[in-house]
Image 1 (cartoon, rainbow, N blue to C red):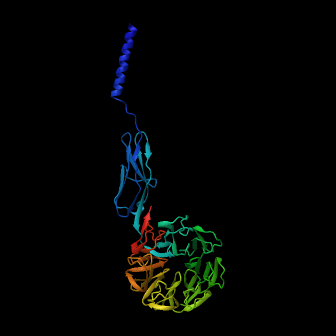
Image 2 (cartoon, rainbow, N blue to C red):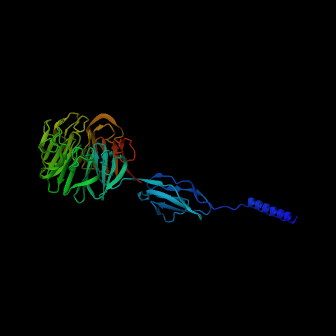
Image 3 (cartoon, rainbow, N blue to C red):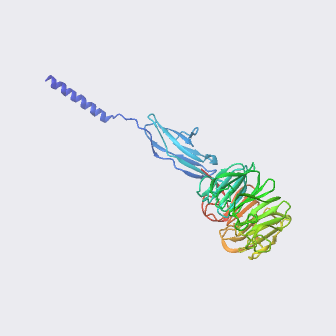
Length: 460
């Protein structure tokens, strides 16, 4: 009986404890769990942005936001806000969630910042395929087609937004698939296509990372597949494709390292397969392909060595198969292909000798089928083809515009190539129009623009 009594008492106690545990369970601590991750965002500079995270777990939860792996001071709540985004805010954001048991890190949220491109110093366009820009201070930016590594970013991936390539760059020239760059120490660097020796490094191997090949370089010009180089002593050197005599050495043999051609040279401009050479005495010389009179010597016969064309020349711009020339008196002259009225003489007839187009001209840039003219009063004029909206007049058309017409004021410089135009205004802002199938306008899209749009940088 006594044993049964004690057993009954034990059963009552056990039942009471079980009932009490069910009514008042003991809570086990729970690690933080992120239920809503922060989301990547692209934001215009100057706007506000907020990154959020939602987490569960044993309270209290604490938070620490990080940018690029570094703690952000004061960012210790479940959201992080920036009231006026700047380019420097772009980066990779995560948040560490803690409690007394442990911690968990969120997935990465990428904040990309879109800002206007400022302080542009110069622009070089590649036959409407890719774009190279130097900012004041010497930073080189690139976008567009990159199939040969011509952007110099170490890849062969096209870029629809500007990518920073190098610093301390003074001059840049974009060819069809290769790029020439002169740094502030006068060294020459090259990248891109090289199947006919246009990089001048003695090989036929493409380069996706810029490689130094020469020193004491003063000026450069990249053609479709040839390169012209002026050294600081005024000597002209050339390499690359020479099938039409565009290197000017008297042969049609390609050159894989630069070869000296002339002395006393001041400036150069490469056309598709021809070369225009301005000597320091103001005489203009030409060599190479001449099927449409682009050399301006009155014939359509190719020249394997440079021939003199004009005197009293200030500058020259060669493109696909047409040449634009400014004389010392500010008069503009033109020769070569005129199928879209790009010579600006009011016709669509090719000219084998330079004809005068207008006066009061400061600079000129010849595209493949269009021409952009900057007058001394800062007004920008345009003529020629507008198939891709490259004239920037608000529409595209296959009709020829054979006489120059004003389109913009307050312009510092202009660059035309292929069916694309880029303009630097007096305030250093960069504007673009025309073809954009490879992202060469640098606006983050492949949308063609028939009106001038302000170019943005995308930082991420």
